[in-house]
Length: 261
Ligand SMILES: [Zn+2]
Ligand SMILES: [Zn+2]
Image (cartoon, rainbow, N blue to C red; front, side, top):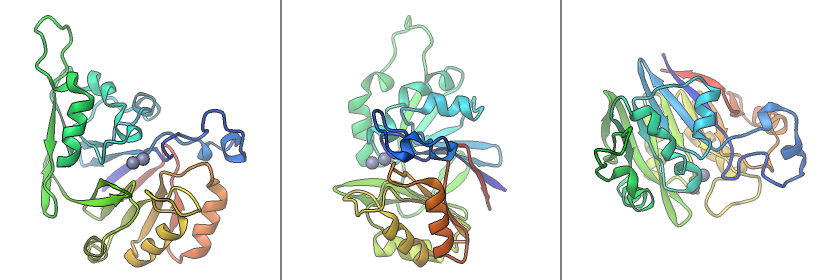
């Protein structure tokens, strides 16, 4: 059995959003407190982090994670990338590889050049970190774990989605192209995690209606909603999802663990 830990389920601002006094931001329900979206995959003994959010350190502390084997970065937006520096203590002892798309690799190196430069021998603790490009549209192995990666439109940007076993992760996308939708249908997914940012339509993300429609089309055994903004209250959205489907569909929340094969 493989597992997923939800390290963060919120949109780019995190919930509560600084300065906001809305009911969701002021809610005492821990399920409405959302760090930036990220998950940890555990396949047998292999732990793979998906995205390095600005909340990375807190997320690792909250979930007692003290080591990982690899990292996948879906795209270079700040809420998915800017915690990258906090990987340092995880690669003092052993090298760590970060996997991403070709487009993204260049931007990560431009934004964090010091992380990938040769280090001065007297620089103190030297993290060893490398950046690798994944191959798209075919099976690609990370630490012996087989993935299938594809690009998804994220408004004018792209983001990396993937299938691993019976699980698919579709974060920060505004659409799912027909060929990818077909692939996802054929996988008979056990678990789908899908972007669902807000109720009104959004230029770069799936909103509730679009996410629900894709879940209906893909028809996994269960589906979790992620990257939620403060327009979406946990209990209300949970009820709405329950009323709309005859299989489990639910908003994710931080620290939730799910299993799949
Ligand atoms: Zn995002
Ligand atoms: Zn994004």
